[in-house]
Image (cartoon, rainbow, N blue to C red; front, side, top):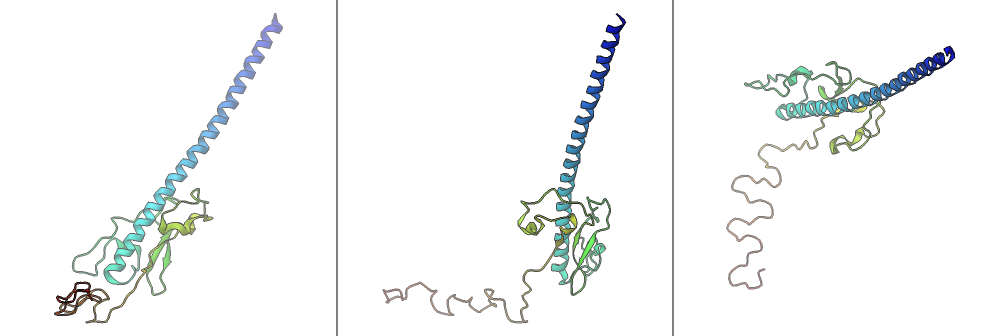
Amino acid sequence: MRVRGSAQAGFTYLGILAAIILMGLLLTAAARVWTLTEQRERETQLLFVGHAFRMAIAAYYAHGGRYPQTLHDLLQDDRSPVPLRYLRRLYLDPMTNSTDWQLVLAPEGGIKGVYSGSGRVPIKRANFAPIDVIFADSDCYCAWQFVYEPRFRRRVAPGNPAPGNPAPGNPAPGGPARGGPAPGIPIPGNLSGQ
């Protein structure tokens, strides 16, 4: 009967060993899923923070016509009598957990954008917002550059209103002439409307 007890102990040992291996495989799979979920969450945070920096740089530029010299200029802009704040604080880079953002410098001086210093490969490869479509199929997070570029730098000479914005007392282009009827309104006595 000793043989039987040893055989049962061996089967129990193999059963416990199989259960431990199965638990290890399940824990490894769960860790991979958790890591991917965490990376996706960090990507979402990076997009949010990057957009916040881009909007702050745009507001700073719109207020004075030039880019900030440092990121701290976005925290307090002293160019006007009442200091302005475009950001409450310098956000952490979710990929590196630091405030050491890489800077995109403007040719005329100043900072026109930021990007992460992380060389990790992004999970998100498509379906970006229209302003971020250039991020598609990037090889690293460092290619996700949140840059503000003024689209139109229309310079209007003093005293000349912009097209479609007439000076007081002047008619708008295509509008009625002074003292005349509006276009498309028939003149009395002219039935053709012309």
